[in-house]
Image 1 (tube, one colour):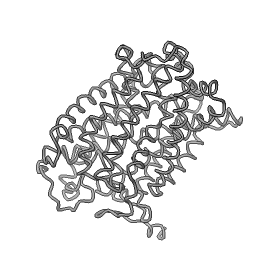
Image 2: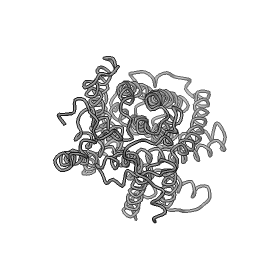
Image 3: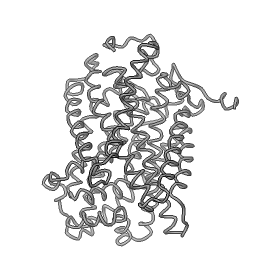
Image 4: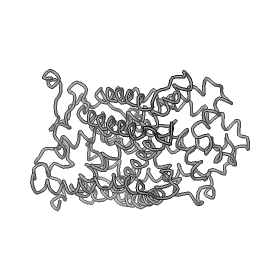
Length: 503
């Protein structure tokens, strides 16, 4: 025990240069991995078509990409002046107030953990299904999940660039398979290459709110670039460049690929086919038109796509624990890092424990469930990831206001578009999306009508935020020295922060 402790250190004052390993490509891969390209296309897009009955999904990705690009203007500009693994937490603390910042940090912790743990449900189902279909081995869904948690935990305490390299390889293979699928779809095109799915009249119909609600989840993780600021080679430029690059790639790639799905299946048939076949719409199409080997490879990469997303969200949650522990908002031990790798091992361990507990809880609750094999997908995956996505949209909405507040205190060299117009426009657009998610939340959960769960899940996002605000106010009274450091990471305790005397 003592030997292990000797290998670890808690960073509280100055960054270690050995932690700065990530360049723009590595951070971009981290972001795109969180959105899981193959998972979004095979799982998310087919679900959107099937549930909403709207064919304008390709256009929705372009519009959502534009909204997030506007949000990214102020967000990326602020990243040049606030470099902290707490990202949203630090931005809101310095742009609005410390109590709101701590509240946001609790929402962020919940959202990233919900997204990460929820994906385990789909991962367990998929691996269990493939083992049974290909090898005749019957394995409960939670066993692959527990094995995967162990692997993710190992990567979580390793050098962050190791995770980036693993994710880079997996994401690259995903892109290759999806590009092949897109090309084949446009060649097959049973109804011709129709531009109808890209027209406004195909999108702005009843159900458009649910389309945007499903679609925003495809971008989740793009905002995580700032989390890696302290581990970037050039944090003042890496975060901004990686964010813009990821948003552009995700929006264009998903728009073209969902358009290809509509064209390859036929715009008049894509809704019914998606509802009936789900993810197998893509895999079956590849088997029929590109060969069974490519279809099997796509199914395998579907699993690795989920794995890549799990690693990415695990890293994000671990760094929030680290940031809050370092500043003693949460227990100080959570700020511990491994000396030789710089990885936040205590935060990683905390996230791993949460994943194990939730998985075991769902496994016990699902014993004998009438949902059968689909239980982890229709409960653990659907409930938690949609709840997490809602939390992340709420966070971005608040951060838009934080950007305005931050540059109001000190304009730096930012122009009026960067410090005021873009963040204000981003706030309005993101607030509208958040309202759409809330209004359509029962649709996202697959419910015919609202019930207790419709309100309980959003409460798991909102209540921790309120508790965080209350905790910060208590720290202001009882531990003012700690309160002063909230949201300022490794800055010296006596540093002067413009415009914060009202906190």
